[in-house]
Length: 525
Image 1: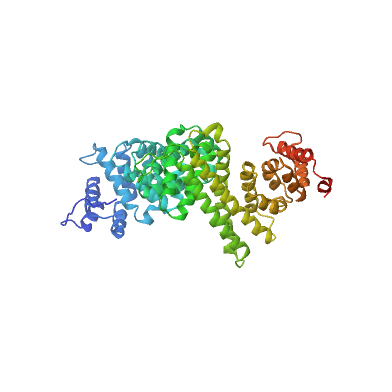
Image 2 (image 1 turned 45 degrees about the vertical axis):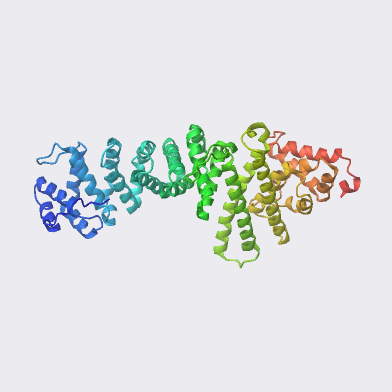
């Protein structure tokens, strides 16, 4: 905000200070009006002198008078709008001085400014109100805490839903939300302000979808910060929002980031958003109408699906290669350990999307057959098959280095089980070579292999439909692993309850082997 309105060369800052130190309100008002004309917001020294001269008490009286809560004597005391505009504008200017912004006097005015913001629809003071809130909140932790505890999210959410696209007001509002979630735990916000947070997500999603400037990337970062937390109550609330509007905005935004030349970190954030949206609305979200700023022709409804899959494949190939190098080749140090954890987290997002795309195409005939072309379907399957090869190579590398424990290795096994359950004849020789190893993989918190066997059950059930598959399972020690898994599943549930179908798949796999009349030499081994 530029405080200076016009050049007034005949008036100096000293003249203003004399008026501000006067005993009468009329003198102080005249001094503030002159300050508004001659003082710039980057002249911090002059702003500090003016603030010390006028005093915090008079500023609060002026603000309250403008709000209709107090009185300031003078010829224009009935002109509350002018007083309000002057007081908010001057307060916002003073807060460019960090020491003033962090002061208790300014922090204490946050509730009054929020009240002004909520009562001044269409007023010219809105931007100054938001600027004041932002400057005070960035200056101290007390400012952010007071901002949140004063009910700011409810007011900000209301404003964001009603604002037109792209103005500076929206930018500052988003910055305020970013400040709040950076200081206040999302778990606390969920308890206090779940409906407001949901409204804010929907409002930011619109900016993410329609903006074609820096606002899109601000929205991307803010949405990523909120939705990557994977908070169940928020996801449940967002499921109740009519999805045809905000879901399309999210699809447009994600597709635009992945379609254009954006930074790798931004593409990762877009994938994270895609994963969150699929968790909220299901795999069908990947298919639907989209609009891209540089594409005039009609865009196929499966474009978002293709963009997400291709970027996920790129990330998996790159990150698995980097993980293998850092884990097995590079020297050990603490900074590498942090990098490994970050890459494991990122590859988990890409793995999750790949698994959900596998689930989507497995139901293609039943639900989405009219929305995905045959060419797209074949392209997706080829891409998934190539990525499966990359993951198998990562597992081969881990096996050769004696690594059987790790969540990234376990997640790799899960992806293999998901895809090969749909295409059991793919990668037959590689699966035969690695099956005993995959069945022995443990997660970080596991004491013995269990989840790896569960993840492979859909594939094992399919490959044991023929004799060769049964021989592969038995010769790798897999039959014993499946039997032990079945025992553990029954023990875990205390009965034959089968919520995810694992017990059924284990039983089916065992029956497949027994019914194929496998030679006794295999079974005895």
